[in-house]
Structures are given as C-alpha cells and as structure tokens.
Length: 388
Image 1 (cartoon, rainbow, N blue to C red):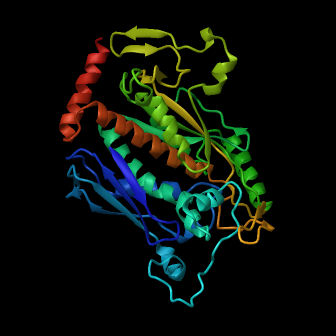
Image 2: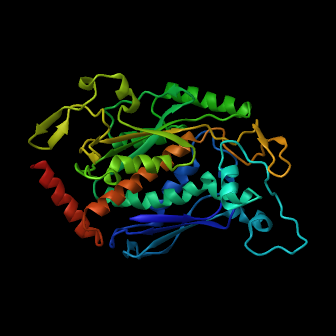
Image 3: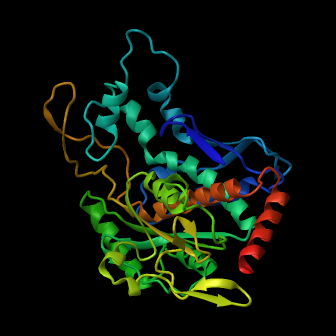
C-alpha cells in the first residue's frame, strides 16, 4: 500500500490517492468522515475549523460499498475557496494585475524560507500553502481506510494525548485499546486524567491570551498486531524505524519513542528488557512491555506503544522577528490563522499515520490483492506463531 496527497491549504480541494488496498474490503464514506471530523476537534483549535467541515467524496476504487483493488481516490473540498479564488486560482492573472496577499517575510519555524530557496519562490505563499498542516486531512483520509482494513483483521488503533505544556496525564496501563479510545474521545483534550485535562485547558487558554502557543506529547496504542511483522535482516525493513519516520513526517513533530523510550537510557538492562513467558491459550507473551511492542525491528505480539513529540505551533499572534527577503530589513513575521494548541488534533493525525504504516506492513507481508485471502493468511499465521 502507498498513498499520495495533493492540494494547497486554501486551494479548491485536498486529494488522496491510495494504491494497494485489497479488493472486497467493505468501505463506506462514513468511516472516513468520522476520522476527518475527529481531526477537526480538540480544545485549542482556531476559527478555521468552524469555516471548513471536512467530508470525503470517494471518486474511485469503491463500488457498492466494497473496494475494487484499483486505486482509491478521496477528495475533501474546501468550502472557503470561494473567498480565495483571486489569490489561489489556477488561471493566469492579467499582466497589470497585482498578486494579492504575497508573503516576503518568512515565519520562523515554518518551511517558508527554506522552501522559497529550494523552489525559487519569491512569494512564499507558494510554500506555506502546501507545507501547512491542512495537508494532514488528506493523510487522515488514507489512515481511515487503513484503520478499516486493520479492524477487519482484528487490529485496533487508538490515539490520545499524554502531555501538554509539561502537564503529564496519568494513564491506567491496564486499559485496553477500546477503553483508551472511548475515554479520550470524551475529553476536550483527548486524555484520561481529568485533573491534568483541566490544567491543560487552562494552559491553552493562557497561551491564547498571551498570543503564544504550546506543544505536547501524543501516544498511539495498538492491539492485535501479530508477532514477527517487519524484519531484522536489513535496516530499511525494520518496522519500528518505518513508524518512527512516518510519525516524524507529521507537521511540527520533533521526536519519537517506543514504550519507555528515552527512559531506557536511565535504567539498567534488567529493568528494561521484557521477560518472555508462554501460555497454552495465547502462546508467547512478555511480562512487561517496556519496549513498546518491538524487538529487533519486528513486532513482538505485545501492544504497540509509540509516542510523538509535537513542538508548539510556530505561527504566533505574538510574532517573532524575521527578515524581509526583498528589503533584507528585520520585520515581525506575518500571521496566518492558527491554533494556540493543536496537540489533541495531532493525536488523531498520529493515530492514522501509524495505522497506515501498520496496514502497509501487513499487505507487504501477506498476499493482499483479495481481502478474504489476506484475512485467511493472517489468521493462519497467527495460529502458526501461537503454536511455535
């Protein structure tokens, strides 16, 4: 499986093309829309989420509720484009027309300056329109399809918030994936600890009042992945490495860890590695899950636990100093609409990014042109490793 996205932040639409989804997988627009709506929620979101209501239009690859095995194309229309036609339209402008809302002052922390240098854009709107986190809506669409595939195979994925602005939420580690998903969706900041959630919202309110922004840590929890998915034989086949790269591709993410992650550097080996046990009913399992479901670049059969660090959004209403690329004079960086905190929404994005990588790994591991054949192969493999 693979996907491509296209579209600009204030353009006509976002487009996702997904290739490699097996045929005969049941798939409905509502399953994708649920994910898109979740992405738009969360405490700290700005006014743009009130302007745009993301709903998907499946334009190919699905017939009568089932995938065909051909590429699936998803379109999310931008209802606000009518206000941006003269700014973002594809038609050439008259020779004497002035290009509106040009940007020559790059914003610190964004792709503006580097992208302008690379692609030769003096108007850095050509950079920020594509580098915007708006593009993650297209990726959530791809991940929503992946989640449907995984669920049909008995693999469930939940994303939530572990930390905002240094405020850490306690998580009951005995909760299963369904309970984690349910409890987090009931929270405005998508976390479990009500006391921490209140403090997080107060921190978001304060950041907004001060024209600032705050970041945090998201976590994705996965149950049902069979052991042995991925590989130890080459660096580029290690599944945890692929997941780390995928998470780092999310806008504003600056760090990834599995299980106890960086805490492992502060412990002895006897306090880190997960002892192997065996049970007649479920086969091999681990006494603990400090390594987050991975050993040697492969799944261990334990729940996958991966965290992602999101920096504060760099678009500030208290702008930082920049330099005008035309005059080379110092200037206060320009402002585009933004959120004071997008960590709750980012947890939904991360959930879907992880889901797609896991679905991709499954379809690479087993015959995947025809979904019933894929399901049988996965079920047979589960039985094989349970009896190993």
